[in-house]
Length: 101
Length: 395
Ligand SMILES: C[S@@+](CC[C@H](N)C(=O)[O-])C[C@H]1O[C@@H](n2cnc3c(N)ncnc32)[C@H](O)[C@@H]1O
Image 1 (tube, each protein chain N blue to C red):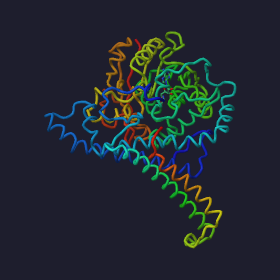
Image 2: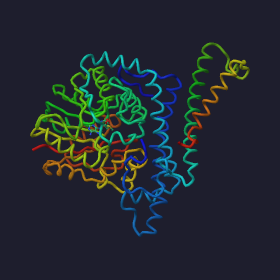
Image 3: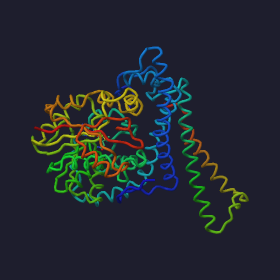
Image 4: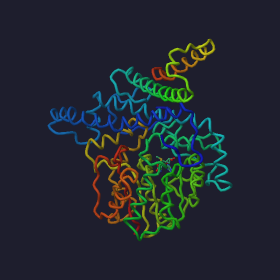
């Protein structure tokens, strides 16, 4: 919705919103974006933690020893897949730092 | 993790599920732990500093708001809450987008030829279109065609994440607690026709149909996607005696004196004051003598301590609920009187959450005949929540 047409409550404290109409809480606007990125990072870390827990449970149930993870070397195809996934991860986690245009 | 209690429950991937789990944990942390830290900061730093310059503590929510804004704890609480809200929707939208065909075919089968009464020419009011209400992208009415129920599905799944268990495993704690309370407090009240206005997906409508099984229950809303989804949801849960219709609560299509109860929950605070007056007048018009108008809502500022007023006004400023402060600044008793209800017939209740406190607590509250006082857990989504509601009997 465009900021110009959006209704706002009365008694808005000075500096409560940026020019883009989004709330501002810190004196340095970079901080507001950083918190967003930080929350996304925490979220993605938790997603990974759950995935790792699942993998370890499956792996041990299938008879693979826990230390097999340390000994594993990914092949070329896996490295390529990881690179693509890494770029998507960075976009998702650090997207909040970008300027809204 | 909360699993929806009907066939339209989503099948998220492992990562999607983990993302939702995280948001629930984050919201609980922000609304319980950080909220308590912010209150502590207020009591130990902010209020004393204010008192030193003004020779009195902050008197209103707005004074607290201005005084607290520069504080680090306010900034961190707020920034985390805004981001948690963003993630509520982000964590369910991709799931719904992927599963849309499945959801639509289940809904079509459940509703059969007997879906909600929709109107092709219906114009959504600006309180719904001008804001992304509580940051829901595109707001309640977003739709790409006549069968689009996705916003309804997003609301159901999003509410499950948003409430992290506090609205019950069927998201109907508000309706269940209040319906049980009313049935206990007024055992002779036997409504035959019940109207729920601003029902969204009807999750809080269903408990009325359960408590008054012989009644005809009608649920209206302006937004079609929620009605399409809600109609199917109700039928899948066996609540076939609810009729859904697209209608504006400020101008109801029903004749005078056609209902024994007009209910709403979490509805009025999303309307302008002008619309609220119109909703109340319409409720009075369609009620039969001896009927009850009852609105579950956020508690009113004039009955709250300054800090608690500030705490609940936060959403007006930072969660795209722009109308909620003006509503909360009103005295509900006066709103009812203005619509023509006899002030002697005004009622208000604070109802303990059925899910959190259990059935006995609700029954005990219903048995107590005195007016209940608001505390700092009233209307506040955190452990120990109690629901506020007010209304009036029709003479
Ligand atoms: C927060 S939701 C209410 C949710 C639900 N009653 C509950 O108990 O959680 C507000 C609803 O009011 C609807 N609404 C807004 N203005 C309306 C109007 N003038 N008439 C009817 N419904 C309206 C919106 O489409 C939205 O579904």
